Image 1: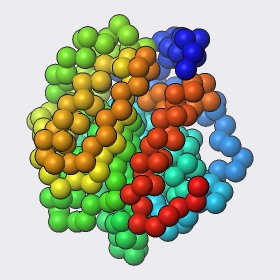
Image 2 (image 1 turned 90 degrees about the vertical axis):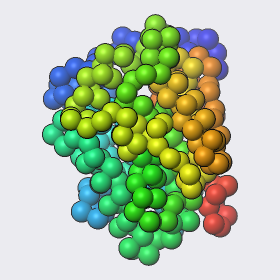
Image 3 (image 1 turned 60 degrees about the vertical axis):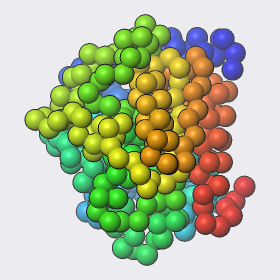
Image 4 (image 1 turned 135 degrees about the vertical axis):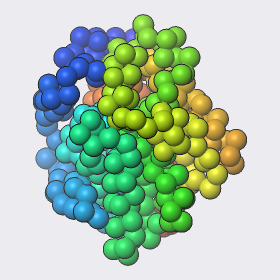
Length: 301
């Protein structure tokens, strides 16, 4: 990655219209407009539906194996974004992984506070299993709040006695809603996208009266024993760096196979900018290679 690429992305995010802690209705519209300004490739198919009563969007790319499923969880600090908004990044991961992606439109805060998102994620996965999809043919992928939701959902599945998926990959996971990581302050100037106050606002919306240290809200405090192989990717220029590092340490301490990748000089969910930044494309290929290595059968190259 060139310094010019890094600076271009930093400027784009730093001077963009999105305020993660701003008025929910306004920022949902801003978030959607930002995503909609980048058209999906013509060979990507997007189809809305229901899975276990939960709205989902199925994203397919040419040559994917329909027997393999990426269950995808979008970001947006639990208050913004949608399955449709995430279709572009979900398609990027799906294309490289040789699978179809099913992006979950979990309920958002503040209208639907914790644990609504976790309940929806579990319901969608349970419905996949009920349809006859083997757990070994499912991989979880999530970004930002969706990354934290991935790990929280894995813990909830264990608590419910359901089988774990084959693997899980998370990009810049928001895994500590107590907001106690050192990087929250230490990386505040370097982070062009997120602010500590913005996350505090959204954490309050999501948690309501719930304990922010609840394992299903902040999986850095959960018992991760028995979870599937986990890939964590994070940029070094983001206030959630410590969430990723502590999540990896927690997983390792609980005997989970974990791969932590810290990408220097990159911001929050940089994987969404593969068209601009070489490292984003490389990270997506790395995530796909990780996912494919845990499928039960060989996939398309």
